[in-house]
Image (cartoon, rainbow, N blue to C red):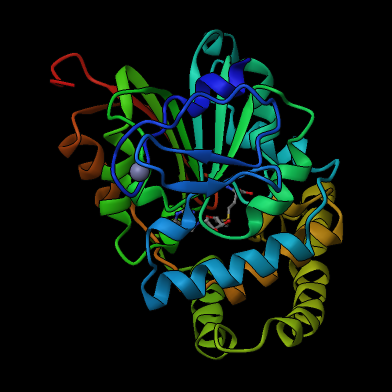
Length: 326
Ligand SMILES: C[S@@+](CC[C@H](N)C(=O)[O-])C[C@H]1O[C@@H](n2cnc3c(N)ncnc32)[C@H](O)[C@@H]1O
Ligand SMILES: [Zn+2]
């Protein structure tokens, strides 16, 4: 069974020993050779107790745990967004490969990768894994794990494809988190990341982001239930005043309107913008990048960039270069 083989990739986060083989297809816990036990009774392997979180990380996990267990179901429009996320990835090349979706949230995009890979670890540090376990339970080649992506207890060089979509920019030190993931890559292994971008030029998007930055100073401290209520009118204003207006401009050919930001939401239901509005206003940490700032990450790690595009965020696909020692 694939899930059992995925479990064999993991070492005990306390002592580094392997886990004892599990025969039960639905084990309630796993045990390492030295007797450290980890729960596996709610559809995911919980390694989170082994690494204490610092204050910011704990707030980040708390925020996303609330988000993904509130907006927890998968939606039809996810497939259209997934096309944008995975456009540069040749899915046929994933046959027989092992993947890791680091920071999988509720698994809304993980489920589009799973059918193409031999095995896939869906990992998240927050209680979002509860929603992920529900949304991914029909895939018997997926192992859902709760753990911090910076300390995944998997041997370096054992993953063929790492995806990390909308996650690293929420870390205190995104560059270090990126390095932790690259270490897991097998020779010729690939990494696909999505990271928030920063507009290089002055314009509507930069203005909107600055305004959001001012808001965020207060909203990241607002209780989540209240913030959910506040997000609704904010998202409604954006939907009518930017998304629908932009769609109208596009339809009738009014250039300045057609060029309004948030074009990715045109033709999508209001609920997708509501979710993203809550997401933007609640996540405690947010970094944004120009390509000049991101490109060195890949060079320094010996990666070859196969594709990089900014569509309201950087989608970058890269692979381990031939000269890389790992
Ligand atoms: C914006 S969500 C993106 C979720 C998913 N990739 C998607 O696009 O739907 C960011 C996710 O990263 C997770 N995350 C943030 N920091 C993490 C860390 N250090 N280790 C593991 N997961 C982390 C959060 O819990 C959250 O579920
Ligand atoms: Zn142990």
